[in-house]
Amino acid sequence: MITIFFATQTGNAEESAETLLKRLTGGGLAARTKTLYDYKAGKLAEEQVAVFVVSTFGDGEPPDDAIPFHEGLQAMADGSLPGLKYAVFALGDRCYDEFCKFGRDIDAQLERLGAERLLALEECDLDQDVKLPPWADQLLPLLAEKAGAV
Ligand SMILES: Cc1cc2nc3c(=O)[nH]c(=O)nc-3n(C[C@H](O)[C@H](O)[C@H](O)COP(=O)(O)O)c2cc1C
Image (cartoon, protein in one colour):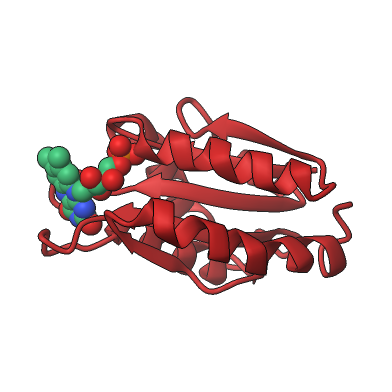
């Protein structure tokens, strides 16, 4: 099972997560979406494949709902998620100094935790609708083959 986690302030990341879900399930994969609100970072150890679709707000901050998740992730010990495969799709805006900071943080934290990155971080400059389809096209076969998630 693939879980598409999303964190949003104004709805864009949730919309992208739902679009990605349709693409993955349409491609024959078992997937679901889940909000990072109220999600304990330690529970990631129970996941096999996690795809993150997250925006950045404030001054490089996570959306409000995802701040506890972010703090929990930072508190986890190095190498504690060796079984997890992941990819991150980051929404942001280059007008801000801390471009796509939350997505970059998740990508770096999961590497520190020993998880396996399936695909390079995608950084969106308000162009998530353009960048999502080709990113999903790259991700789908990796999920199907490498993660055995069909
Ligand atoms: C008040 C405000 C602060 C923002 N801060 C950042 C930021 O620090 N870095 C960034 O890359 N984008 C920033 N953005 C842009 C958002 O990440 C972008 O609009 C994104 O599409 C919002 O997605 P969401 O609706 O899922 O929250 C900010 C937008 C607003 C309105």
